[in-house]
Length: 179
Image 1 (tube, rainbow, N blue to C red):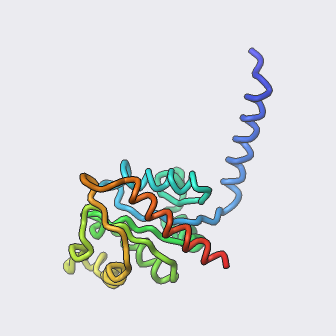
Image 2: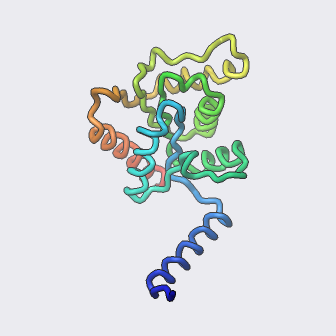
């Protein structure tokens, strides 16, 4: 069975893209930090697709990492190269070492952040004092709570308004960063 010229061309293009992705460390425009158990199948994935559709290069762990990648190394590299961080605070965000690590890394790197408070109020965000592993990140949560963000109730909120507000804020910050 002979393949069409278009199929052959598409196969070569996919191979070039895969090779480029493996050999280059891409610069990400947006780093999406989220608690997978709360948001992977909802807002985080939708934000990734939305930002991609706008021509931005977003980092989302489940979309941007492959088996065998060094977790901390890949996260650090993506945060270093990103222009804007979008932490999606959810009810269990502060229970995750990786979420808090990403947030602290973004803030220490002086990245712009556009927080989304997903089914949680900023005043409800706390790092458990008894967990020494997490408590060292409490300062980052307190600092993020002082950043104007977007609150969203997933049962009653307007999804298109959320996407418009987030993308408007991110695009503005990306443009400022390019100057």
